Length: 216
Image (cartoon, rainbow, N blue to C red; front, side, top):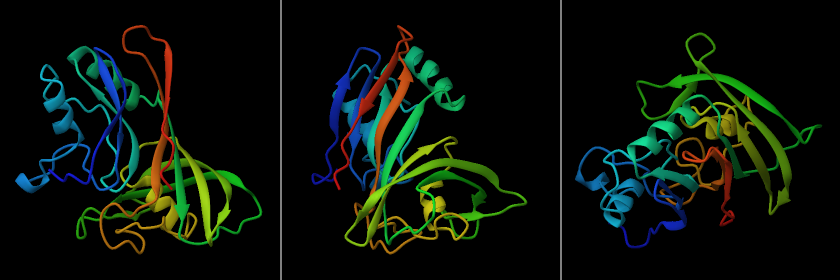
């Protein structure tokens, strides 16, 4: 366990907990004992009655922000379906490693991409075999030679916002500190934060929203 990386519990109920994940921590266990430390392992240690596979969704290791973790099988089934059927709403804040200069301050990026099997876990643009990734975006402002962007992803593809930022058919500017698509040199450098998550409560059905302030 890395003592420098700590999760913050934003909300807890009998069915689920909402946590703030730091950049540099895995959402779920990776392969090998060195990748056992993760959000779900720490939640299972805190909540002994938690189910074995409690994550209905994930964040990249380098992405910080809101992560929902279920404690019961019923909540996991309900919320997994909501994520799969795109009934949830997610909002992210990113800092681009440069100034985005466009005539418009908002729009939508649609790019087909897939896993690069020769260079895992990189994703690559592929108009023939790729699956479409769709993200709405809005420019919040410029600061210190960097543009602050709000993303609302429609689809939930691996590395979607990172690729939409870095690829020339997207912004052509990587996210600050991105070790795969930009100039990042290690974990906990990337400036991409899952700041808001909205879903239907698994028991009451009431629309529920949680917010996490970006640390940058």
